[in-house]
Amino acid sequence: MATDAGSVSILILLDLSSAFDTISHSILISRLSALGISGTALAWFTSYLSDRQHYITIRQAKSSTAPVSHGVPQGSVLGPLLFNIYMSPLGKIIHCHDFNFHCYADDTQLYISFRHYHPFPTNSISACIDDINAWMTSNLLKLNTDKTDVLLVGSPKNVAPFCTDTVNISGILVRPSTTVKNLGITFDSYLSFLPHISSLTKSAFYHLRNIVYVPS
Picture 1 (tube, rainbow, N blue to C red):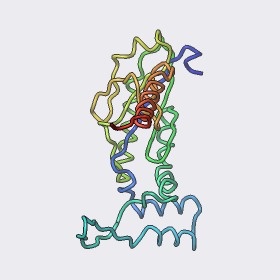
Picture 2: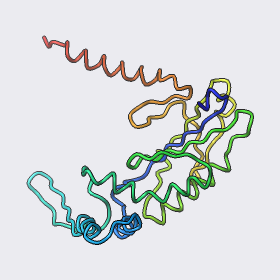
Picture 3: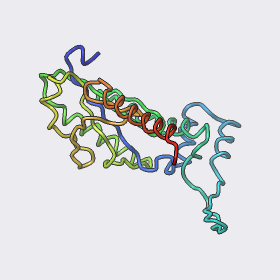
Picture 4: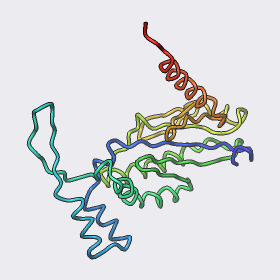
C-alpha cells in the first residue's frame, strides 16, 4: 500500500543472540504477574521455570549437572509464548518513535514509511534502535548487530536515491541490502519475489535430480 502511494518503506530485521537462553526468570514472572496471572497459576509457571538442570553427553561420557538459572525451555510449546510475553514492553518503546513492528518468537521487525521526496529518517531510526538496545541490555538480551538486516521497499525509481544511505545500529553503519531472508521467505526491494522463486526452483531441481539419479 505504501509503495502504491509513492512512499518508501524501511524494514529492519533485528537479530538477538541466544535470546531464549538469556531470559531472566524473575523478570518473566513479574511480566506474567502484570498480565493478571496470580495464585496457583503463577506458582505453576514458577515451578515450570525453576530447578532445571542441564548436562552434556559425548558418546558414552556425561558431564556433571548444572542448574539452569536463565532461559525458557526450547522446543516446548510454551517457550515462544513466554518469550513474547517477556518482550511485550518493547512495543511501547517502538510505538513512541512512530514505528510499526511485528514479532515472531525472537524475530523482531521494525518498519516505517516515508514519502520519497522526504529525507532518509536516519535520526529517527538511530534513536529508536538505541532505545531498543538499552531496553534489551537492561532485560539481559543482546542485539546482534552483525546479523541485523535493512531493506528498502518501494518502486525502483523511489528506492534508488536512498540505496547508499546507512542505518546506525549500535554504532555500526548498516547499508540496505538488495534482499533479506524474512521467516524463510526472500524479500526484495520491489516485492517481486523473483529471488525467492529462483532460490526455490533451484532447490527443487536439486532434489529432483537426486531422485532421478541412478548410480552406475
